[in-house]
Amino acid sequence: MYQLIRVREHTGSGWNASLRRFLKHYKKQNKGMEDTDRKNSGFSMPFPERKAVMGNKTGNNIIRLLRADEIECRASLVSEKGLSLLLYKDARVDQRILDETFGIFGWKRSHQCINDKLYCTVEIYNKETGEWVAKQDVGTNGEQQKEKSQASDSFKRACFNWGIGRELYSAPFIWVPASKTEIQKKGKKYCCNERFTVSSIEYNAEREITELVIKDGQSQTVYELKPRTAGWKQAGKTRKDAGQQHVSSMQMENLEKELQRTGVSMDAVKERYRIEDPEQMSGEVCRKVMSALAKTKPKDAA
Image 1 (cartoon, helix red, strand yellow):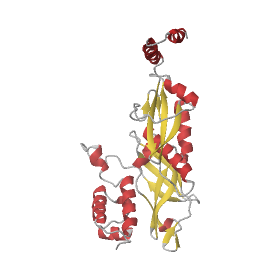
Image 2 (cartoon, one colour):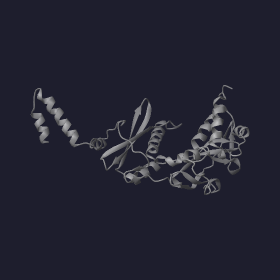
Image 3 (cartoon, helix red, strand yellow):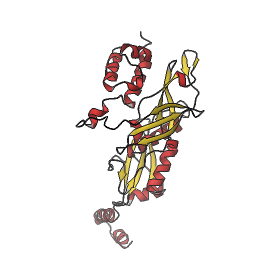
Image 4 (cartoon, helix red, strand yellow):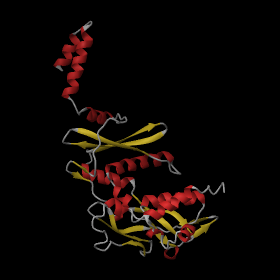
């Protein structure tokens, strides 16, 4: 307060110089406090200049892995032969883990509209440096309640950047055959009204899914991923080489989109490439299928 009064005593040309000196001194003395003031004032803005924290560990805080009851299943591609499932989390899970890991006052979120797209910034308070560290991502629209859907989606994506639920990216291709569920045909499309839940899930030291059991509404197991037997990985083989043995969840998701675009059935792919179970498709075969589909015209233009 004394310094502020001294600045006000200056007049004429000396005023600007004194003000600049005061502001420089103020920023130096209050470094790292601007964000706290912004939080209290309710003001928010994009933070492209902020530093990022790598990995799933920030200081002494380790973001835990998702429990089975925190993971939900959604049907991705449904056909007369069966359906594929995707694993996902909702925003409430993100909020719970942020509270558990950093405390209710240790994180904050804000939303910004950039080029008509809604971005979410999730900030974590670093007690060691006294800084708010931010990570940001953009959301996509849903079919209903677009604004709410986009806000929730951008928040979940920003939390993925912090490592919450990132282990879901290691999920295998989950295929439920028609013999294990009830598939109905409505018009030209197939659908399934069954509700699937994750019964159990296990991870390895690298935070990758190694065991997975999914059940239907009658508690019947429709999918099970069993751990690999000891010694399956050959000595000297790198993680990159080992990961190429089986198709990834991301590869299968892209394949499903290409099948929908071209109108090519999964049965046709299985017959051409001699695949008994899509779940057992190798990454190399998947790349060959994608290459062939890329040369295929869309079903509407065929």
